[in-house]
Amino acid sequence: MCPAHSCAVFLQLACCCGSAACSLCCGCCPKIKQSTSTRFMYALFFMLVTVTCVIMMSPTVETAMREHIPFFTEMCNKLNAGENCSTLVGYSAVYKVCFGMACFFFFFFVFTIHVRTSTGCRAAVHNGFWFFKFVALLACCAGGFFLPNQEKFLEVWRYVGAAGGFLFIIIQLMLLVQFAHRWNQNWSSGVKYNKIWYAALALVTLVLFSVAVGALVFMIVFYTDPEACFLNKLFLGVNGGLCLVVSLLAISPCIQTFQPTSGLLQSAIISVYVMYLTFSALASKPVEMVERNGKNVTVCVFPYKSGLQSDTNIVTGVGTVILFGCILYSCLISTTKRSSTALQKKYYSFLKRMIFLYFPEDYDDEKTAGGQNVKYDERDGTIYSYCYFHFVFFLGSLYVMMTVTNWFHYENAKIERLLEGSWSVFWIKMASCWVCLFLYMWTLLLMFYVSK
Image 1: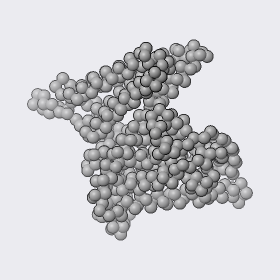
Image 2: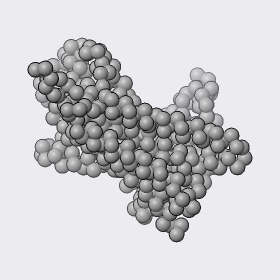
Image 3: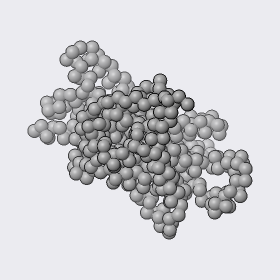
Image 4: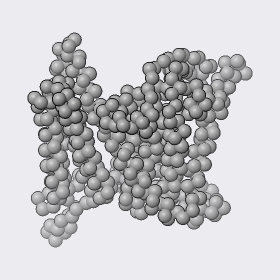
């Protein structure tokens, strides 16, 4: 065995069983930072458990396993998992697995509080020992199946999950508002050096408002009816009016005086997202039917499918992938130094005492390690808050649990029906619209009163 190959194998073992940063075996791969490598590994753990939860909620997968795995029934009996492993599927199994994942991230949240340097033993555990942490995660997820008084546990854990899921949604909305302000600020500052930024700013704003208005018209056409769907009409009017109000507020003289970078671009971004949430809410509402010509007719739905089961599976599959991709993106982007600092300054600086956010300056130091090059960018200190990172993944675990089990309509939940209507999902998404608008309006008014 060549020395380079031996070195690469040794470093991979050090990654799994020691504090070395993880990297790919191929030396031609792009360089990776130690902090990025660590977050990628935790994200991989998160996605593995998420995929497991999706499988547990899928009767189709359960049937396929029963038909294709040899001695499936005998194996279930030996594991005392009930007939056809009934205790390992369904919403209760997802609750228990997500309980284990949430406990895993909550432990590391507490364990890494006030970690300011990557040279300590707690930082070493956070950045390495992946094999042992994977075993610990498996043990946590399996441990949920051995809890006593499980009916009471499921009832209490459901409300804990709902509270954590709501908080995760709020963090997502905060990130969106912060992103809108940052985009407008960056492009507005470019006007000083090149007037073409005016044209770019105007063009993007016009396109985004066109999308928002087009979405509103689309929903009026497909999700309203002269004889039914009163809530649809009401909320389309309310949300459309609120988008107009925040747009006028953003360019009002009192706001412009104290916040010159405020403009229509932020309002356009918020309006598009509110229209998306409104559409998602209306699409998640249980169907309504009216009697016409002696027949019950379904109204206020978009005919996206031709009636074939394959169409339903495709729509559900694509929607599920997009949904969990957004969850993972929110978990990762909210834990970067830039996003976390912005959230801390604008919304909840009082959390500094509670979770001890700490963000020193970046420091890059490249180290070549036989395989993929690793840049040890935390030599002088951590570049993101370890405890906040785990706290967001803790909330993400609860959000995944509630989403997969259809929030409060858990008893008949199936992953194939994830995009079908339920009142709990409808009200959660509609409330998210109002929280998003409130947060954006708050940032405008807060800057106005602070400046005064």
